[in-house]
Each structure stands twice: as C-alpha cells, then as structure tokens.
Amino acid sequence: MKKINCRRCEYYFVTWEAANPHGCKAYGFKSPQIPSIVVKKSSGSECSFFKEKHPQK
Image 1 (tube, rainbow, N blue to C red):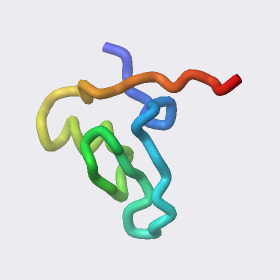
Image 2: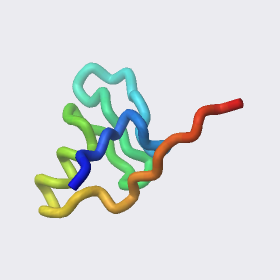
Image 3: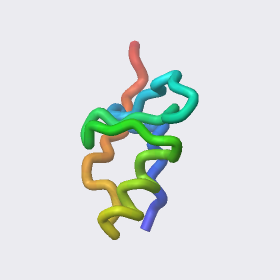
Image 4: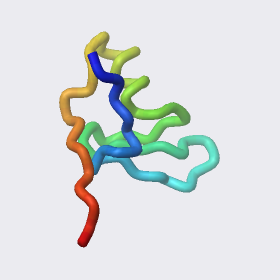
C-alpha cells in the first residue's frame, strides 16, 4: 500500500501553533504529528479522505 503524504492532500493545513502544527480539515483536528499517522494509530486504518492537491494554474 502506498504511504499517504498529508502535505500533498487538499485537506492538510499548517496551523502555526507550536504545540499542534499539523491540521486536517476532513477529520477536523490539529496535532503535533502528521494527520495520517494519528488516523492510523487511532483507527487502525489508513486515511480514507486523502485527496491529492492539484496545482493551481
């Protein structure tokens, strides 16, 4: 299975909070870890919301 790279997902965002720098709009949380790692640890499944960003023209 291909590893999910949250930084390439349209739901990923940087929060600029030192304690929780990573965020996921799809799941609605901020975390000190990359969201896909948190999802895998808490649910046992890979992220089901991953949607690759398309470059803006």
